[in-house]
Image 1 (cartoon, rainbow, N blue to C red):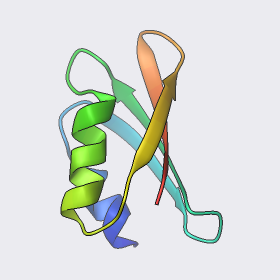
Image 2 (cartoon, rainbow, N blue to C red):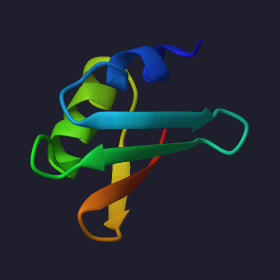
Image 3 (cartoon, one colour):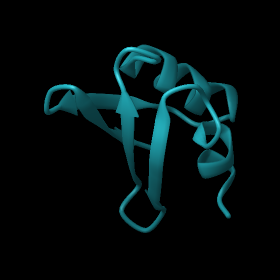
Image 4 (cartoon, rainbow, N blue to C red):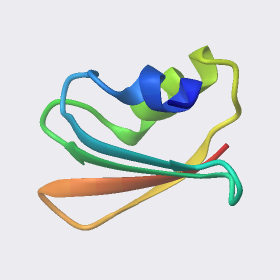
Length: 67
């Protein structure tokens, strides 16, 4: 399991994490009442990677980051 996946999994509000290292993408489905794109990016950066993300949808949100 990639380090980025472990850094995001188990964070409050995170429901699903999909990491594609070949594409350099992270897809996170999360509850925006419990976390935010900024917090997700902080977790990725704390794991030693850069993070440039965007969000989409409403209610349950998806954050797509580049690692």
